[in-house]
Length: 220
Image (cartoon, rainbow, N blue to C red):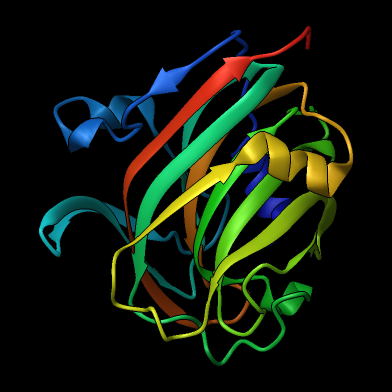
């Protein structure tokens, strides 16, 4: 998905001093989707639905030459730290995509995005995208080809771990400092995405038990 599409999807307006949520999906119980927004701007949307997968309830995403994401606004003002945890699983990475640092290859089997410092100018909005890549090595970080204000962080790569549930945990404030060289003023939202519109490929992924816990810092 191009960041020209992704960032406008993630424009939000909230601010608080601290936040803790054991599960942003709320176990997919009654009313969970009231606090999530499905976003896409044009073309064919990625399909999202709740399903049972491998013994757990999950958000199931299928993308066939499509794009779109699910976003939850949270609003954290100037956090000193923020620990994001989630579980995810992909059917397969996009192995035919060997251009992951280029606009034509800006598609991934799964992304979890954290949106910081929303701007009315979409490409000025800062974000981090944790991705399951096909060929970029684990640990790689690089600017998104559409916007230097979006940092790509490769957490998983290749097919070796596909088809299994994996658990992730990131200090997103530390990752923000490492990429942008300064602390964030706020965290506005979290999103999950599966997109294949640039490559025309197909991807399938599941997301579960997404949570964030923060400690307040100084003034935003």
